[in-house]
Length: 322
Image (cartoon, rainbow, N blue to C red):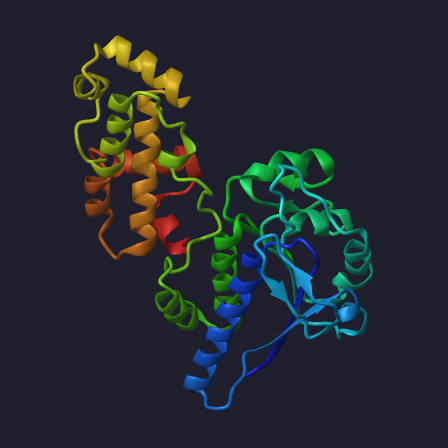
């Protein structure tokens, strides 16, 4: 079994989760490799900081690196965590950026977790690339680096040898995708079960579910309707029925729902049903007919049309791909 070297860049003010999560997943991958072929090591993971000095995260965790960045050997995979951005802006260490500019391109894979994309962008590594980052910093990234195509929707994006992810936990999904590439699907599925996470969320999955993406209504009656839609996508979700649940006239309900959530009732229902169908196609072996029914579509043809409108592929093609 091939052993891949991994180097994780440490610096003052980084988000500790962006470092710890990849280390834990890669460590679990090594345990899997050893169980399947005794003595095998899938990844040799090292951490490095400028000068090899300990670094501190805003959460209070202190990390002691294995080595100095300037003496670290070129790894197969380079991982860059995100700087903490508690004040709503993202700052990058110019010395770390300088090191990345000079050394990152030597690695076969370059990975950023969350706002680590800012360091890669400042180092000139994301020009012409399609990337993602945490939704709250996506606009800032796009404005600061107009030569980079920023998509705030997916949980991770792989563009050539550069991979970027959204929030810290989506970095776990990205790591599982890389492990699947290196060690095979069985390894990724086994690790996902061990870590009690989704069995490989595809990078196209949105950072927010429909329920989270839409604004929660100020009115309890409308919030109850939102919860009902999420739990019962196969129910009668016509405006008339939903209005009755909210004790409003259909016209009052449609206007209030749109004003308070930022989307119309019909669009909200359509997005919820599509999201339900996508999740079932990814995570189950249920038939397309069954998935269409429990997702609230009147027929498989109706679901097929919804997929083509939103994703430009059929449900069967979506399942095959993801």
